Length: 476
Image (cartoon, rainbow, N blue to C red; front, top):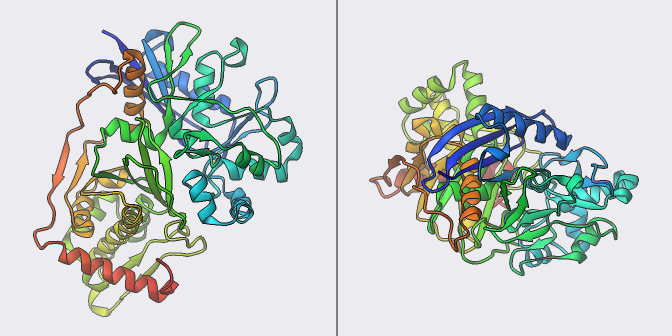
């Protein structure tokens, strides 16, 4: 039996799954933590990968037939001529590069120019903004940078032996599409945008592989697949089909869907990524999702199970309470300095169950706004897959069907990013035109609301009215 490993190297940890290459059955699992922070020594990712493989009962990559890494998107690993990082890696959640992102938008001629060029308008997370920050703030390190990689690129390169074996740096189109200097529509790097970002410098960039391409082999002979970004890995792991969208409720939130065509949103809300199958993965990110519920639970001095029970006691609409969940500012809509607001408080509705319900509905209304942005780019969505930590609460799926006005499926909890990477490894191992037809995950189905979505429309209307009162009618 051929076996493959899928790796999810996220901001917080490294998770691995060992799978049967033909059937997709998970045979073993492992996990190891990453250091906290917005910078990291890439060597810590390697040590965590080795530890996670050991935790899964694998002595190393040589114990399996193929391996692929899905990693946190964006970020910057800048290597010198000797293959050693010139500084600690800058991660996607390092916001110091926000002014540089704004500068890049202005210098190219605005958001429309960037959307047309690479499908995505620069924000602090994008690699292009981090290159500009490095050039402006640490020019000596910038001058010593010979190669620029993403986190998943670096781990793939290291699996292939790294500098010691002369391994070639490679990436895939999905992760490359989050740099700000690779065009999904054209399928190529934009050297002009790289030079713009890095103040005229042109470091070596990884070669972009096809989705089923092979990066090489480990020193022990295991096939190393191209790998991809974490959102692309999740889409592949879920078996995302046309007409479906994923609403991922982690600490932050994302909404993404497959599209046969590239997107270019001049408003900047929709990132026009490529996916790991040869198509495209337009995506919208919010800053506030599961932490809205955890913060509400802390405020009410209950745990998350009790918050769920409270919210289910309240009627849809929370008897007029509306929570604008911008607890750490917000990215969609663009309100970086906002804070959360609770509106509609009256003597008759100030009860814990209504506050719990308002937290759930506020979080979901924010995600519904994100879905509207996706649909605004011509992406059809008729069914939702709800994943992430907050999706475990039964009230969330029930309320989501109301707020979104469509059927919702909550797949069983699993490491879908790692599963997607494992499926990609199996694809590279098989050498077939299409990825292996692994079974789609089972889960819980919640039907579309019987009232045709009337309650959900009223919840969203109250949310939009509250947002307009607090932040102005011009906010989309």
